[in-house]
Length: 124
Image 1 (tube, rainbow, N blue to C red):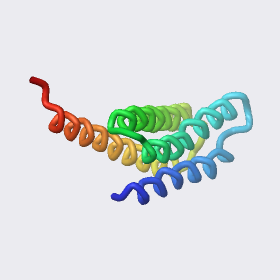
Image 2 (cartoon, rainbow, N blue to C red):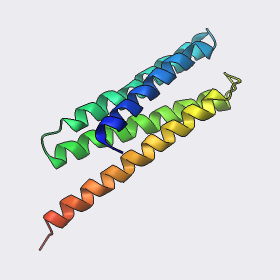
Image 3 (cartoon, rainbow, N blue to C red):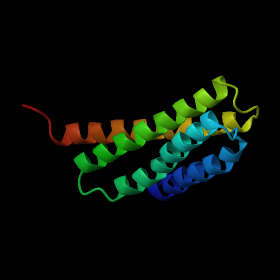
Image 4 (cartoon, helix red, strand yellow):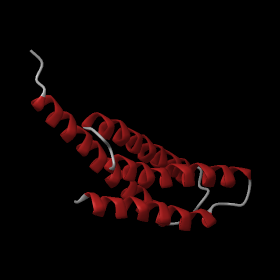
């Protein structure tokens, strides 16, 4: 997957989450979940774009770790919504699957960059 494809995929996840939010109840819990989800899900794509503009491998890794955290947080909030039975729909499974896949890609990317960095700079 190219960086452009992953940029598009992370943005699409944010858009899908935004489309999902109206399904949440219009009460304090639903609004709180909507707020948390929209912030973390849209941060995935925004922070991945920032990572793509990194000035160094260290900067890239730092920014990818933020993407990892936001993806994991999004997955957490989706699980909370599901387990609290706020929404009775199958779309939450699709959102969880896509978020998990993006998270796995980011974790693999972090490992790849770390291994590349280590192989370029072996310690004595």
